[in-house]
Length: 424
Figure 1 (cartoon, rainbow, N blue to C red):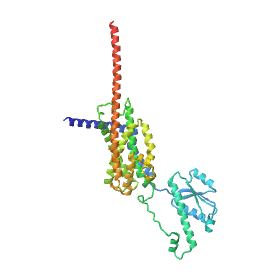
Figure 2: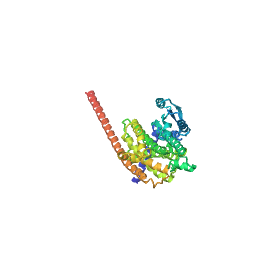
Figure 3: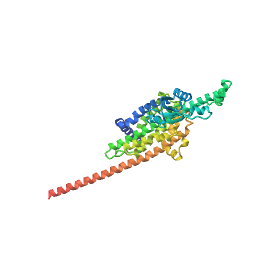
Figure 4: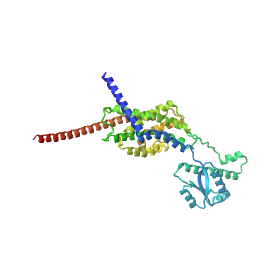
């Protein structure tokens, strides 16, 4: 009977801690923002911004020092393309640079004065392309358009010189080999389909860690002695404390995780090839690892503001270290080992392969096992850290009781002295 009684007490204490944690989440505006509002709103805003996938009609400036029929043909073909539009013609390169510096244009096409003479004299002509490299998407549009137009014009010039007998011979003479470009796993060839899936998983981890850290900071502020674990009969066991808090966070992010990984890709027509039978087993250890990782961070980082500064600072590096926006093979071994400390690294890799590549759980088994290993390791570390917090809280409680006892003893001694003096 004592065993069942202890189990019932443990469940009761865990339920009490769960209620306290859930009440604190709902009352704390900061925690509520990171747990509910940010996961709901931020993916929608981010996805709407990149919903067009590619950049169209990038404004460019043309500096035409040649002013020939060929240079004007190049300008017309560039302006007729889908990715670039000619904003204006500049008198010289300095005027064009001024327009780019004021962000009125994103690039410059410079046609030198010897452009047509080089072509007519069988020499190679050159067109200089100046791009604003602050945004890679605009650079890609400007550069690829220039390459495509020059190749088309070069083919037409070559056909006019060779004068083949048939149209087919003309096609073969200018393009002996045909290249069919197929975008694998990204049909639109856009930014959203390639990166936003990784961003969704990173949002899940960062908001969860931030919310747990803010909740722990609030608990310290509400405690007059600034301890994470209050001195209470319900907070006497490690597994009771961790279990109560864990259930609270897991209940919230079971819903938020489903919304981020299933609903948002469907809203914006991102690649969605994963079956729920493969996605659920991957998301379970990912959410668990993020929860225990967040509980560790909440114990290590003492103040609410420090948690926000730390997690916001590492957001962009974690996206690069995941191997999605930057090739994994090009990342130094040291930084790859650092990336293994964060659940987002394996969660992003596994989720992107399931969603955009149509992989199965067996294909992402290394990431799946890595997330379970992280869950186990972080759970053990969480138990150790919370054990230290309990011992620390008890030691401070004993010290406070000793101080109170000494004060009471001093007061009693003063009272006894006064009573003796009165009797005398």
